[in-house]
Amino acid sequence: ATEIRLASRPHGFPTAENFEIVDTAIPSPGEGQLLVRNLVMSVDPAMRGRMRDVKSYAPPFVVGEAMTGGAVGEVVESTVEDFAPGDHVLHQYGWRTHAVVDAKHAVKVDASAAPLSTYLGVLGMPGLTAYAGLLESAEFRAGDTVFVSGAAGAVGSLVGQLAKLKGAKRVIGSAGSAEKVRYLVEELGFDAAFNYKDGPVVEQLRAAAPEGIDVYFDNVGGEHLEAAIDVINLHGRIAVCGMISQYNATEPAPAPRNLAQIIAKRFTMRGLLVLDHFGLRERFVAEVAPLVAAGEVRYSETFVDGIRNAPDAFLGLLSGANTGKMLVRIAD
Ligand code: NDP
Image (cartoon, rainbow, N blue to C red; front, side, top):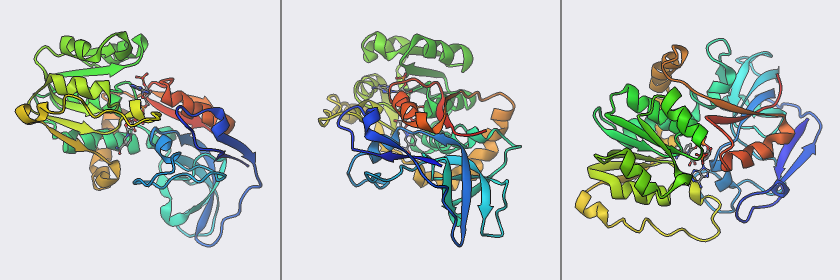
């Protein structure tokens, strides 16, 4: 077996030295536990937060211990009745080839209903984040003009497509390459998209949204958030899902310098944490899984092969190497 441990806490952008790849014996499950052979694991921006030694909604990773995160695998050994060898399960012990999982924290997933990887992406946590964030946090309504940053990523790509399907007047996305911009417009049906590296975000956003925006779904923070505040309409709504442009910052970022506009424009800004929205999970899957199966919602996945390359997958995620969900294929 192989696992990836946190070797040290990063200062600024993480590097390969922050991770340690360790070969270990295959663990044995105790009472109430399963031994799972992991097939695919997720790397998520939130893991950067857990590499810091600060109190947050998820506990920090421990230096010298294997990291954790979403994974799907095959049960190899089970000590409980409800699970049998061959079952596929979703659980939180990624970053390793073999996981011992408490059966009560394992969720069975159906490989015949959808590809196993989608339970970590479009039909999993990022998908629910997009769904709950757009519908609940941003209080989306038909006729809204929606702007989403990080638009070619796992969360953002679904936000834009759901907004279109639910009657948005106009959907605008930003992403970090010309190829991603093309993907948003030509393959996902965004009305407009721009590469935030091409020039000031506020100028590009204004050009893409001549009548302003009603909703901003923020995955990025910083310059993007300031631009959205400049362009947002009266009574607009900002759902703050992530601020990835600041995750590697070594100094506190300035607040949006134009926040005073919140008074005249009476817009709302609301933080979003997917953990609060698990109650929506069934409704989300019932609605979105058929759209995915019918091809009405499209998704991309970027795979990195092999557990030993999981740190590279994570570093790649932070620098935009992915289109859609970034995943590590651990075994077939
Ligand atoms: P993505 O699939 O969107 O991958 C991250 C992307 O961020 C990269 O592909 C890159 O794309 C972009 N990026 C990296 N650095 C910057 C930067 N400096 N400025 C702008 N874009 C940057 O990840 P997810 O879909 O998993 O997550 C998207 C966001 O949602 C993150 O902020 C994450 O923390 C947040 N999130 C929040 C949750 C919650 O409960 N609040 C739950 C899940 C995710 P590009 O090439 O376009 O730069």
